[in-house]
Length: 275
Image: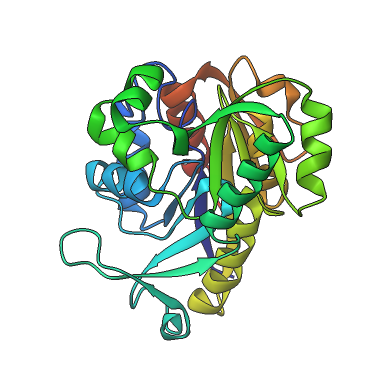
C-alpha cells in the first residue's frame, strides 16, 4: 500500500546550525523533500512570528508547532476541517491561519511567575526585558528579539536558585520548566509530541487510505518525546544528543555530522531508500 511520509523537525542545532542559524547545508535534502511532496513540519521552542519568518526563507507552507508544543498553527484550508479551529489574525502576506492551542494563555504563566517572585525565586524573564536588552543578551537582531517576545503559551527565563524548589512551585500550578539551550522555558503540561500527535491524526485523515510514515529529527533531550512518537526517529549529533532516550533503539538513526549537515546527511540517505 502507498505510504505518505511526514517529516517533523526541530530547528536550532538540527535543521539550523547552532552558531550561525543557517540551513544552507540542508538545501539538497530540502529540495529532495519538495520534489517528493513530503510535508515538512517545523517544531520548535520558537514563537509564531519567528517561525513564520523562517518558513518564508525556506518556502515552507505547511503547519508548524510553536513554543515546545504550546500550539499548532495551520494555514487555513490546509486540511478539510480546519474551520472548526480558532482563527489566528493575519500575520503575513494576507495569509490566514488557524490555531489549535494546548497551553493556557501566556498571561496566566506571567501571573504565576510574578507570584513566584513574591516567594523570593530569582529569575529574569523575556517579559522583564526590553527588545534592546533581549537582543543584547541573545545576540538576536532587534527584529528577532521583538518576535521572540510575542508568545502564546510559554515564557523563557534565566533562573538563579534552587531549581528543585522552583519545579515544585510550578507543579502545584500545573506548570513545568523545560531546559532549553540557555533559557528555562516555563510552560504547561505539553511537549513537542503534543503537536506531532495532533497533526499525525489530521494527516492520517487527509491522506487516507494511504498509510502515514512519520519521521522526526532532533538534537537534544527537549526533542525526546517527539522522537519517540514517530516511526523513524533521527538523532542529530550535538553536545546534548547523548541525553536522548529512545524507547525502541532498533528504529533510531544517528547522524555523524552536526546541525544542518547531519540533517542533510540522514534525510538524503533515508529518502533514497526504497519504501
